[in-house]
Image 1 (cartoon, one colour):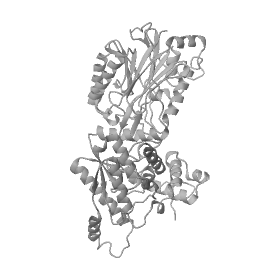
Image 2 (tube, helix red, strand yellow; image 1 turned 90 degrees about the vertical axis):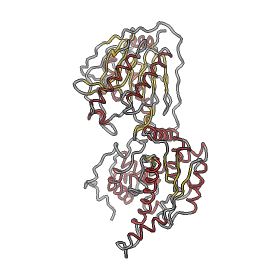
Image 3 (tube, helix red, strand yellow; image 1 turned 180 degrees about the vertical axis):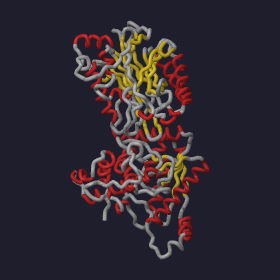
Image 4 (cartoon, one colour; image 1 turned 135 degrees about the vertical axis):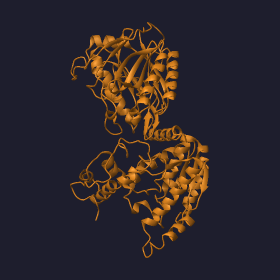
Amino acid sequence: MKTMRVALAQLNLTVGDLEGNTRRICQAIEEARAASADVVAFPELAITGYPPEDLLLRPEFVEENLSCLNRIAACCQGIVAIVGFVDRQEALFNAAAVLAGGGVAGVYHKRLLPNYGVFDEKRYFAPGKACPVFHLGDVPFGVTICEDIWFPDGPHLAQVRAGALVLLNINASPYHMSKWRLREEMLATRARDGGIAVAYVNLVGGQDELVFDGGSVIFDHEGSLLARGPQFEEALLIADLPVEAIRRRRARTPTVAEEGRLPLGEVPTPSIDLGVPLPSHRPQVKPAIADPLPPLEEVYRALVLGTSDYVRKNGFTTVAVGLSGGIDSSLTAVIAVDALGSDHVVGVFMPSPYTSQESARYAQELAQRLGIRLLTLPIGPIFEAFLEALREPFSGLPHDVTEENIQARIRGTLLMALSNKFGWLVLATGNKSEMSTGYATLYGDMAGGFAVLKDVPKTLVYALARHRNARTPVIPQGVLERPPTAELRPGQVDQEALPPYEILDPILKAYVEEDRPPEEIVAAGFDPQVVVKVTAMVDRNEYKRRQAPPGIKITPRALGKDRRLPITNRYRPLWGSPFPS
């Protein structure tokens, strides 16, 4: 039976590394050709990396990307390649080039440009107009890009109605928890409704705050899974698509798309013959079907990959983590070791007069279990020097949060001094619960180049720590059991300033991630005074978040690009003042 052999090149590419990305793409073309693939598809904007952001405003960057496309096209002899790049005509386009016979046989321009959350493609690109159908031998296929396939009446419909039997969709789809499930349900539906095989290739790797999880998939025309790539790893996913079975089914039973039950305006569908035949017979390959990761392992792997890529792609080799003996710094250190290796992680313990013996013991025990170097830098004398310098202006005033924050800022200064002297990247250890409510010290524990747990709520921090300990018990049990505390004054615990995290985190999820108004959160069963307090803390601490280091996005709505609120802002919910009396 005649088949079309498709290879999906799930690669970890780097924004701006045009030369390196081009080299990786050409290597993958060779691997796909060696596997007798007819077509190999690469992620969205593979040449430039995704998202290139304002690099697109530099004409020389766009020109070099076009030169790289021509070099890649020269590699395409005896195989068809679909490569994401930036096209320049009367405007810029997010484009997919279909390469064959050593040249560019055709180009598809992305029609649906996302402009929400972390996306702002309308800032750079114009939408495409045509939906070409390409012919590989006697098999017509369509090409679309990412967002184009998420809508049931999207551009793929025009290609289906023009006879396409296969759809190749190239992507840079950022990760959030369990997104793979939503993605696969959508793709299976598109395949069934169109009576078309769908091959979906996704980017993998970390880029600033984003992580791309790979998980490339192929569905047949009945919506059955044919192949699935691994999450958070590079892979070349290969499968034979049953084009004759698709053709027979389409001749026998009209699809939803062909019946016209889904609306579609007039869209040009030019036909492009690639001049490449398909072999009549060959032994079929057995496609790989990787198992999806369990939820906690999926998040953990995202954090490890995001940390590894941020450090290495920015030219660092070693990171420093301020160890407090608490859960956040412990988990950050463990993730750093899993991402970089123990030789590339340095723990820094900075005890104050209020640091407990338990904290010292836990920090030392963690460092020993991880096999990392531990520096101990007491801050007591430095703290006393600060108090002496401020003795006159502070005369007669009680100790308060000012003195607490001084300690945090001393620690931040020491960490940044180590960074400057040795070229280490400082990993901040704050979590999403703290960042949301402002329970963090600006220029203190917020200091650093990258915040690993920035989008991880405190309750999830504990779950991830227990999950990781189930593999190897690296975090001392006492760290998991002790009440969270900053130890900036005698007897301090987090719950003096915040509700219990089991209550706080669901409120934050509703307010920050779901944009639910306070009255709805109260109606869900939460104490009105607690809701008032928490939402007020979130609202008035935007200025801190604006100055925080980037961190890995793992939820549907992270702090940062996903949620852009003005710092100067007098709007308050209409149901009452958000500020507690």
